[in-house]
Picture 1 (tube, rainbow, N blue to C red):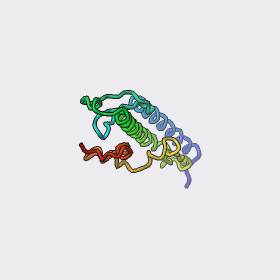
Picture 2 (spheres, helix red, strand yellow):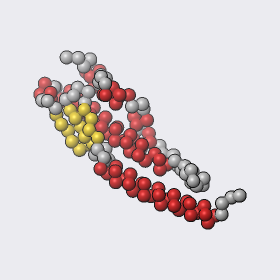
Picture 3 (tube, rainbow, N blue to C red):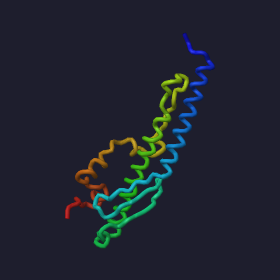
Picture 4 (cartoon, rainbow, N blue to C red):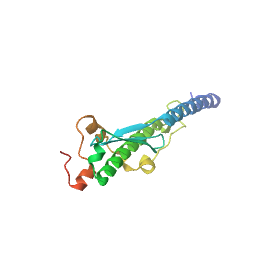
Length: 152
């Protein structure tokens, strides 16, 4: 026997309130989030804030003194873009549950978010760069463009 409309509405309202509270908690957490990433040459650390904005740049161990302006700029961009990508993926993972259909209220089907359109195609790619950073750093694209192999 189907559940009375009043009971289903009560369940939907309770789930809506719980979702609103969860969204508010997630928003508070995201407003405090930041990510710092080290460039593959370990010369620069870039930090981004909650909206992907550049919040800090650190030049490490005076390595920048031996770099050309182009190399330093490439290191800054590499670290900043990687930090922004980490933030985008963090936002995506934090917000994804709110788009899923309701298990308690079948009428709440959820909705689809086009993460690629919001953040760009990189956000959906495998996170192999993070794996490389944890172990041995991969040769960054900017070194390939300069014709360097990253070895000293």
